[in-house]
Length: 329
Image (cartoon, rainbow, N blue to C red; front, side, top):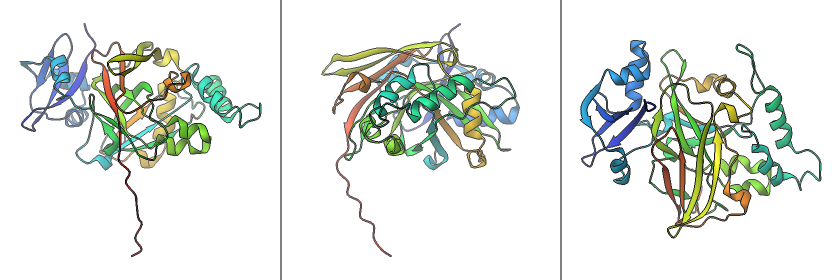
């Protein structure tokens, strides 16, 4: 059986619905958003998949056609974008330190960089035994729900950015229950769009480089994700492939376990506010900037990986300058 996925769709009249895709794709009855369905599952004490199957109708959906029509939304959202926290962890994948280390090696004058030290700590202690606390990963804040972009929609780079580059990875999707318990709803394919030139200038500018939009694929993969996920990251320019590389993700290709990354994120009480949505990017080891690619407006990022059946495609757009004046009051 094909892996179970949930999708959100907005119809031309503005109404919304949720789709359960297994061997085929069927509209669910009685729910308009994945968050609403998850709240029901928590309240009823059942899995998200069981809650979805109980509401499956006979109405079928052609997912490829819906994606082409631009009606599929990001795998999760919230009517109040401020209740969505975008964050992530870096240096989590085997080989992920190589590109980062090269960025900062010159500044370290041949000494081992902070990036490499943190990566090695993860290699040594990022997979603790059950019940134990492992090495703390790098962590970054990316923004709130206003920066979340749907598949096929543009990723907009601000006018002050020095680069707009892709980061193909998995994102964990979480809903905080009424008692403060984080529930992992599933994982989605993601493009954790970042400014690598800004980061390369000075590692202390990593925080600045991450304050960009990000895109989520339409499919929320339910259940525990496969340990070994293999995909392709591609940049298209003027209809041709400019750059393409395979990428690996999933726990088998990571220096940290998902449980360890989740612990170090949700250990902060402020990240367990009931009703909030968290999108947590798990990191990558494949970047076009490491191969010297300089993206430009109109380039299209394409990320594909089974068991997801739909690609995550986003064109790159540039925002107009928007000067900010702070007024004394």
